[in-house]
Image (cartoon, rainbow, N blue to C red; front, top):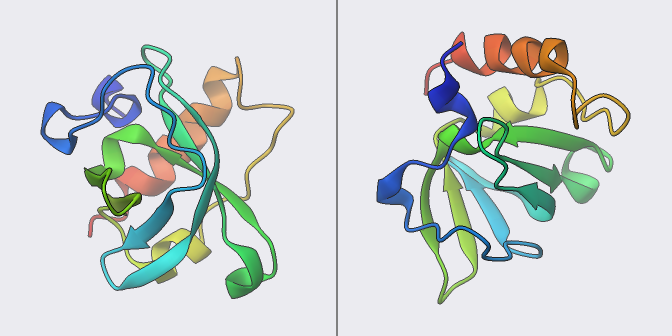
Length: 116
């Protein structure tokens, strides 16, 4: 999986250091939840999305490279995957994500194999 998966694309409108916590997250076919946490660390940028009751409170980690746009006025983030692809993603593991390249590779492999 390329490093591009783990960085915000310049076309998204993201400004480094901006807080995205609480923004609504929209898949290509509808809402999937809200941002619980996010990181803009170089080579490891991501969103942690709380899917709420939609899929029983699951948290998923979404690489920043899947963000297709950010609407700061509406506080919405658009991702380039379907609700089903997000629902079937590996569940966020708070103990692994910070420094575990293997975990990022697993997620990158999942999302990279599921093009929207």
